[in-house]
Every structure is written in C-alpha cells, then in structure tokens.
Length: 184
View (cartoon, helix red, strand yellow):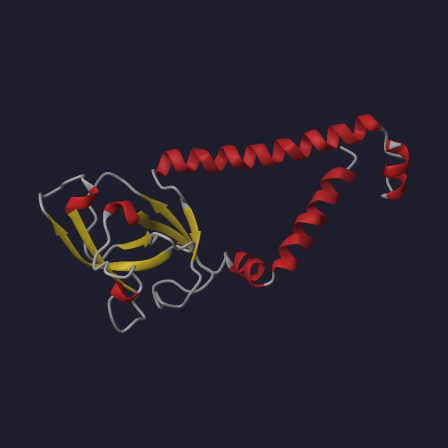
C-alpha cells in the first residue's frame, strides 16, 4: 500500500527507511526553529522578540518591511523610546514611539501604576483613536518590548506572504518537497 502511494507521488524508488529519515529530519528542523524562538523569548523577556513593520506610520524611523528586534528589559520605559504594543482584542501589534509616561511611584513595576501614551512618527495625532473605546492610556501589560535594533527591508518576504497567502503555501510545499526528496 505504502509503495503504491509513494509511486503515485513519484517517489517509487525511495524506500521506507529513507522516507522515515527525511520525516525525522523535517521534524528536527521544525523543533530546532521552535527551540531557538523560545530561547529568544526567554532571553529578551518579550513574547515576540522579532516583529516586522507592517505600515508606514513610523517613517522615516522605520519603513514597511523592516524587521525589529525587541527587548523588555528591567529599566523603566521613557518618552522617546520606540515600543511595540498590543491592544486587547486585536491580533496585529503596533510599532510607535512613547510621547508621555506617567508613573505613580518612580521606577514602579506594577503595570497599573504606569500610564503610557504613544504616537506614530508619521501620524498627526496621538494613538488614543487606536486604543479600545474608553481607553486613554497603555499599561505595561500592553507592551511587547522596546526596539533595540532593526534590519531594513528584510521583512518584505513576510509582507508578501501575508498579502498573498498562496505564496506562503507554495513556499512551504516546495521546502517540504526538498526536505523529503533530498538524498542526505
């Protein structure tokens, strides 16, 4: 039965041992990528240590397609820093600059004691229109991290795959075929 399936896929000469070896190799690649990602999450303290800029709201500081590296760090957030935040109920994080910070106690770590207001460099007004209804400020629990570095335009591939999902599935399929049919 397995031989007939392999023959139908054009893999007739591949024996079961080779097929299992290639499957294990694919599993190792996926597992290694996940381990690296989780290691970065622990090292940076950010739930998403790498993000791609999806809009032009931060131009000229960052352009659409730039990859940003995030770190939460221990020091307090200050006006002028670029942060990535996520609003409750929304899937896509936002990259903007802090324009105001209010703290009840200096250096506090309680997320409710820190109030943050953000704005995109290329936007006219602050971000209160982007926040949820009735929300006037961000708290520390909204922040994913501060920007500590970036690679310009490298994230264009991510934008293309999000705008055209069939490209993503085609790429995954091609990579999967390469892994399965490789001889080593």
